[in-house]
Amino acid sequence: MSGAVRVVVVGGGVGGLATAALLARGGAQVTLLERHEQLGGRTGTWEADGFRFDTGPSWWFMPEVVEHTFALLGRRVADHVDLRRLDPAYRLFPEPASGVEPFDVVADPHVNAATFDALEPGAGAAVRRYVDDAGEAYRTALDHFLYTTFERPDRALSRDVLRRSGTLARLLTQTLAERIAQTVQHPVLRQVLGYHAVFLGSSPYRVPALYSLMSHLDLGDGVYYPRGGMYTLVEELAKAAVEEGVVVRTGADVVAVEVDDAPRTRRHPRRRGVARGVRLADGSLVPADVVVSGADRHHTETALLAPDHADLPEHVWETRGPGISALLVMAGVRGALPELRHHSLFFTQDWPGNFEDILGAGRATPAAGLRVPDVASLYVSRTTATDPTAAPPGHENLFVLVPFPADPALGTRPGELDAYADRYLDQVGAWAGVPDLRSRVVVRRVVGPADFARDLSAWRGTALGMEHTLRQSAMFRPGVASHRVPNLLHVGGGTVPGVGLPMVLIGAELVAKRLLGETSSRPLPAPLRPGYLASGLPRGLWSDVTAGRA
Image (tube, rainbow, N blue to C red; front, side, top):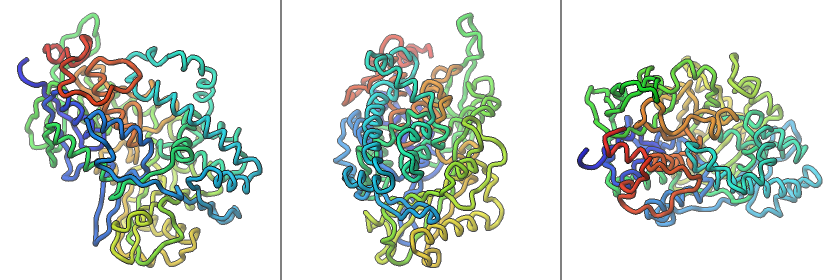
């Protein structure tokens, strides 16, 4: 095989962009194909009449992961993104019937401790211990589990992990809700420690207690916001990719991964093949020696691949859980909204019932009969609290996210989604003391599960991707590499380590590690030297590809 190895990356989301940039730096000839005209995938942006909205992720967590990705590319985040720490980090609005007044979580842990003690004597110290433990769990996850492809699970079993094996076993066999119940009794404080499960596409009653590590991020590290919005990360990753030599093609709709069958052998008795490129909707073939799919994993397995070449054909997905979807309301509002912080969380009293409505009963696969909650626990972002350029003078922008059942049939009747949006805008206004909120909306866009299914090919219209139950986390989550098509790799929320911006950035690095044959649980050393893939380990996929043996 002569010339540079050709890599095609399907999908221009954060994971796809980071993967493309990393592999181009390694010496590959990389083409990134995005079917929409705008890059970013779930991390999108929408502008109308002087308002600017992030349409996806809005919390900047795990800053060291973003810094490491940029460092791999020989860049400093600080040179590209202007981060501001939010203080208050967020405001909590318990359901008024609870009798608990809204309160802020701030940067000063001593102030937070006093706030928590006012709700439950001794809770301040209990939460501080919980956050300390969360910090230890976070460091263990970062050092031993998040940066591994799980090709060699034993490589994660260091002396430190073995020393903590008892604790880790409890964190994996308990739910997050059970772990929190051992810490505090007040229902609102339990919500403070458990709301992060929604970022994992699930609920605290379904995710393992290991995800208590999330409390380290907001109550320990703090919450940040990039001036200009979350989409600045997409813009800077796209610039980095182009500078590394990636050819970016938008409006390029991939409809199939083309696979040539390979002969069955005693070692590989199952049907296997070699990806030779991807087919576009216009019928053209984009040839490749390696294909990386950043598309929705269900879509890749059931639509882009023939059943004989899929690791996860359609019947397998019947046993898996898509997690939550969302109703998104982007609202440009006339006048000031000091009642809301940059981030505001609204919690219902019947939290278990709220999650059961949108996810079903039990801890595993969602049941039938999911329903839209009448009163919802929901999240509101007002980025104009930090960045006034996101709205015209005298106006504010609101991004309302309501966790919703993953059912693309919901909201498809005329006016149905708008009626839901009205309901939840009225709820926000009533709870926050802004009774005329809905009447002050001058710009509005509403997005529901059917939009995620149509625009992102999202499985069952899920908003984030496969939820993080125990059987869908870590080594039990679909892996980076295809078993049936060895030169097909995956990145994004449908593979390890999981959903969320930091996770898909780590996932991009895992693609590079898989090509190199690197099975350690540690991040790659930064910066990566240009052409680093050419020195891949003998057992690495890269060596197989360059030798023509993929």
